Image (cartoon, rainbow, N blue to C red; front, side, top):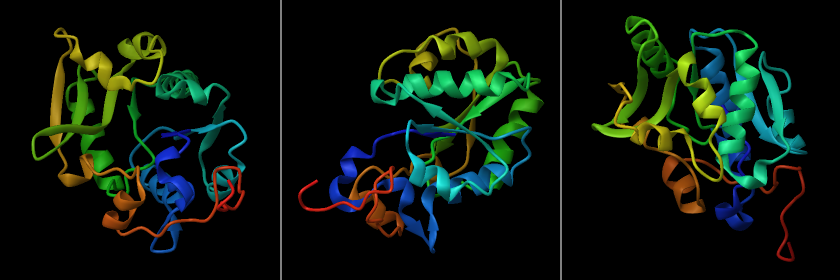
Length: 206
């Protein structure tokens, strides 16, 4: 689960992953969905020094890894996450974004069930109303390509390869709903936090 973003578009509305959904921080909500799914392990990638984020999930059965290069973009977090996940020797890895409040354990199970049905031979991609979205499951044969990504690009960049065999799984609007701005947060039913990832309270001078 990728949770190392700097939440810069939230401005002074606090870090998006600390935003509350029915009183639960978004990061914790997303991680609880992952824990509740039929998975081998859960790895959460956060930015270096993002202690406030770590504290929201510190009591949960997950492995938290810090990405010291989070400023370079999403690719570095994918690399850190895949390297950590590889230690369990999985047949594949489901890459999820922590800022998608509509994703539930049952939808993750749908994706993993499709992956198993294809015997790990295909990429499994969530769609919403037939539009490509997230999460995405990648077979172990893709791990080296995932670790080779660079810059502020996600794994979706690899799926432009015409040779990629992709099976789409419709999970509804949740596949397309993420939170990047205060407007996104309000529309999704979340409440902003006053804190950034380090736990500092935002002020007008920050």
